[in-house]
Length: 152
Picture 1: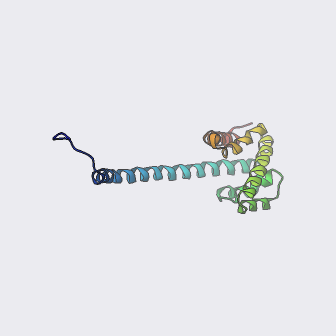
Picture 2: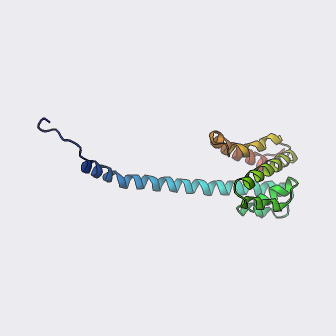
Picture 3: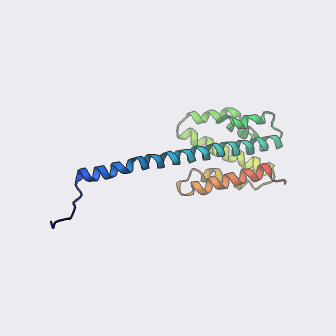
């Protein structure tokens, strides 16, 4: 080696990475805050939309839209299924798939009762397809907003 050149040793690299460590934690913290804010906004928006849909369809206990997991029961009932099918959520994988199918059928019927095309309910299925999940979430949010607040 020529004089004046510095060689990065393993201990030197570790101290360099260690100096970046607080920045990494700060970035992770900021990302977590945004994730929590997004989740709260998603929950409030979907709860408002579903409670409005339930009110417009003259569902007696529209406030159930504000209770996580329980909010599935009114959608199933309005689609012509028994509310007890909600318990499929307790059966991993197969129960979840069956519940997704029942919910999609229920949403199809609900959308048609509200004078919207039933195929819009397929946005719910798109949420669970890896390459379409982002588009599916955005489509679902737009669609339930339209069904809830647009007059038809």
